[in-house]
Image 1 (cartoon, rainbow, N blue to C red):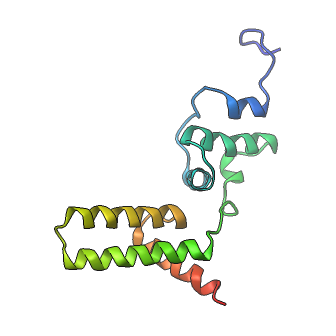
Image 2 (image 1 turned 60 degrees about the horizontal axis):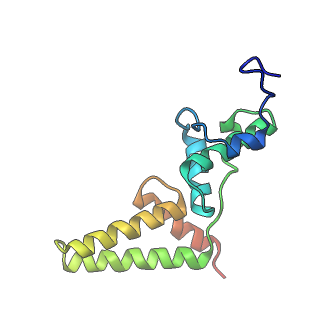
Length: 139
């Protein structure tokens, strides 16, 4: 029994299912893992923060150690090609009509989708990462 309310200690599974806040803001490796989890699974930020914390608890490590550089999901070639094609199309449309609100929104959406897919902080880095990813997977 724990001293807080004479309840038994919570298991790791309870941490994932709990309605308590996820805790302090995540550090960079954990934030990347959370973003990748949200992109790969149908979950919100609260649950995505709890997954690395629960995994870290199971192996008795800090969450950043579990969510380090090995965490990540490589996107499928077709998705990367689609995202780059969409971004380049939006860039061309925006070059023709730079003040078109629909073109601006489309470019913003395409850039955001590529950022989520590639997991980099800037569109430039995402384009470079996507091109490198496609070059690595070239047939």
